[in-house]
Image (spheres, one colour):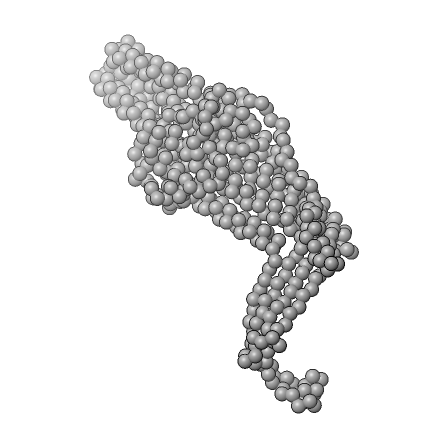
Length: 481
């Protein structure tokens, strides 16, 4: 019976787990966002970019989620973490190795053993065959291995959430690049329209100069105005090229691959209304970066237990069962069977100073992870407040600019008619043109800023993310389109 108790003792002790169990902290956050009215009370679609009702934008983002190199790295990190979690779980189980050997030995006659074999008339050479299984098992007496498995699983969850954060980031960046491209193209179209209008005005002034109705200085003013409009086009064309290249790389293609698909100008798509939970507490489950930070905190807490386990003994069992013989004929007979078993105790009894340091380091990493998690919660709340504020102001700015542009268009037409009739001077027409160009250019940029603010709001709210599997399924579907 005493032997049975000795065997059951490790199993009983294995129920002990050192270290404090993880308790998710509760952050201090505001009860509501300042612009919560802008958020629709419905579940956010994971493919939020389809809300822009732009098929080309949807295609580009789908391809980005499927092929982006940053996201591919994040998925590879998930595979690594999953393998580490499996290894940590396997450490709790017995390990067994099977082996078969054939060893040929020729013994020296001039060694002590060689002289004995020669004295008794034994052969100096022989071949030994052995087949067997060797097993070992570290009994998790105080839960250090279980804490290691807990930490590895938390690391896996953090890797999955981090992949979700990368997916949201690259999707938002792709949408932002697309909207910026459309903004540059719209502004270039405005500049070209202004160029045509300015060229017509210049032709009118040239005719009036030739007729002696206008002075040469008026012609110089219209030429300068025309060249100024043309000069303003250069940075717009450069911006278009930069965004084309940016989109290619985000999608995972060499620069220039999608130029034919995107070079034709299209209007900036209207900004959709962000959707999702309007409560700041929802960010704790909807923002993958916050989830990842919280899982890293859980992993660091578990690793304190891993370090604490070194204060206590480590018990391992080992055993060997097999057959060995100097010939194959009687290898698998009863006389060839060999077996052994044993137990080993390892205890860092005189190394507690180093264990103290390791525990202190683990506690320091846990404190760092806690601060990082709190920071991620605050940053997430800041992102939402800023994005919603910008979206709200962009709505107002776009509405005001639309009214301003309409009024300035009427004023320019009136100034041109009055100049043709000789009622006003050229400077009035030039001023009207300049004001309309500035307002129209600003309107085109503001429409894009409004749409980009909606993208930022979706990104800040978590982009409809729920878990890494939703992005995996989305990317798989995109690859087969």
